[in-house]
Image: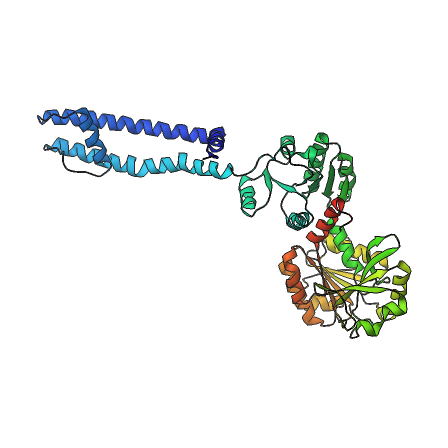
Length: 483
């Protein structure tokens, strides 16, 4: 009952609903005229037969006949009366049993149910809502980001233009707010002036519009946005964006930093003063098959092995932990110590064969550019010639065709990057490449976090999630000490 006033208000604010209700009332008025007319004709015909009834009886007979109840307590004796009864019965079937239920459901009941549902979609945050994160859309990045926001105790709200999508997310237990992304009132209702961060995860033009609107309302709030095009970075910064990221490029560069062919094998992931945290693959090094005690990196180089990643599973190392070819070691030490580690294993990494990149989209191009900067040979395979037009070292064809990877040099390649935008395709290509080369390093892109374990099971040595990378980058703006 507490939602009834809001439901009625919402119902009557809709122009189409008001028009439907007016149509329903017109139909009921027409039906009432028929009932009155039939009741009057009932008295006229009964008078011709020499029988007299009250006005109430006339309405009673009309409604029982039109509703097909037909009690039979009052009937005509003349043929004219019986023909009139048939007409009343047939019109009752049409108006009462067919048109009235349809009109009621179509013009009142369905809009009422819709109003009940839509009234559940939040349209304004409480006045005391503050230090929250406003996310302007729902996509894999949002899914990953929400998990981290909840983990670190940050409130959030997702702005959704479509009411039905908002209701679906409400049913999933998410905090949403209905509003158009290009409407300043949406951000006022989202308490943007009290927000800690606004995250724009739409296309470049929409992100620019969102940034400009938010900045005009709140000059101090942090705004983070994704940019697909290089030219959009300056435009977003001019619009007032605090942090502009190119997540696809970042993912491609991260993939490239983990290939076996790099000159610098330990990839630095975190730096605090003189301490650095780095990761390095063990594949094709003298470490494979040996235990932590046997390799003795701490005694030889001063670097500490603080963790191990093995096909998506993180574990803390013990003295007897054995290193496998799929293991990625996590080191803690100084840059000098990591350089010593590179020298220690570099001899086994002198590889001249090109790295294969399956997919020439933004991630594949970014990975190719990073490899080129490192001086590492590469080849891009894509079946769409328009995507790889103007790029160097490309092969047009399907990576699933046995002849194409063979022509690209998969037999000698140290690593293969699988970078398509479809997780289903990435799983397929991972299984395919693992069958072609059981010993090759497979580094794969995942669009959804839930597919990371599946890709590892399919044979990928390393899986990097676009959504997780973006979420970690964004959450680091709020909690740099924790991330």
